[in-house]
Length: 311
Image 1 (cartoon, rainbow, N blue to C red):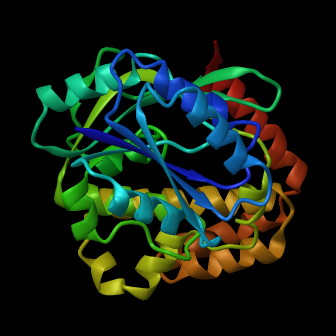
Image 2: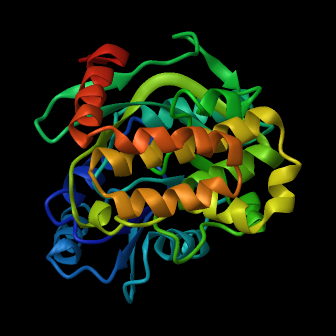
């Protein structure tokens, strides 16, 4: 009924925890598809050892590909899967034991959706846990009426807590191969434009946030979702005001990220991409380039303390 797709690239110290979190589920999936994206460390060996120890528990397949990026890995994993329901999980993240059980109940209760997701907790590099503030009721479970409006202020979907219907995923075209920054946001957004999205407001996933090679690879990149609509302005022009506001929030967030890091070349490139869509708002943003990077870092730390709470 359900396949789990795990893109794997140089996560030898984390892949076992990721796989263990799946086998610890109160409701097991039918299969796990690991797509090894040309790892250069011992990730593949770690995964194979885990599979050998747990080969009688669940069907786990490994696909090897030349390093082609996470989008290609996820797409190839979906194509190799045998079920209509697809769950994605990054190799450095973990599911809570009742994730699949509660998500499958959500699917049964709200069958007209194509994309399903839940809330999450964040674990930082110091081992601290945080849960972002939510604008939905604590007991919310159901269809998201205005995806863009909610996604602007809270993380509705990401690549470790989403379940999609395979048919519609393939019809939309999957993830854009070659894109390395917000390629996932574009897919979620496109799904929300055409289909229903269902959400359960419980933190059923642990998202690990720390610096690694995958994040370094995103340096000096323009958010792909902004780049896409800059090149496809006709599609942008027919979006609603709330949908455009959501895209602006993505643009603004990544521009601030560049300035926080003091990477002004990256910030300028992101500014140029956003300017094509948000000319007047972008002109106003010129003033934030003079704010020193340390101010953004202080504000980011303050925001986490105020808008998140420690578990």
